[in-house]
Length: 106
Length: 122
Image (cartoon, rainbow over all chains, first blue to last red; front, side):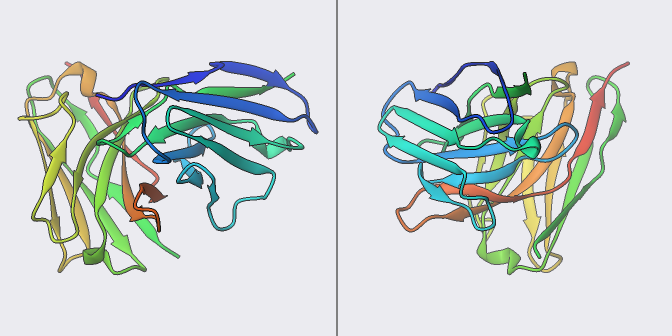
């Protein structure tokens, strides 16, 4: 099974900050990596698919990069609505999620 | 706008059974694979099961294999999850999610339902 490890598990940031979350796969997954945002009590929302493709309707301050085993989600100019938990997900072999990264207000 | 509406959650005793449903609308249901993903209270996301558009192939996480059965009725635009031999560790919000394949072949879940809570407790 492919394991996904996110770092950090949580971070504190302020509105306007640039935030970077990393996700590492236990083996190469090419670009089969997706990112989701989840706020409390809500379903996950797709942000980025295929490592770097922005889902329709998602603000351009969200971006993704990486391939192979190492991936990054970047939020530039953090907005109040971006305080949430973020999950990476691999779809190379079955499906596996990272443990999540909670972005909290500093 | 794509809509996915889960139902069927509730409180069940250990060893009991429950069937979840997910009613889909505003897309050609039979053309898309679907998944069930769960989230235990305060925990992360766990993929549970998937099924292709025709219903001809199904997939399961090891944690539910042999106990859960995924199915679909394309004439009713509805996805199901039959859960048997339920355990306390199956307690979670269960989401149905629509799958989509990118131009490079990778898959992702582009739409999710609001979830239904399953509680396994005596």
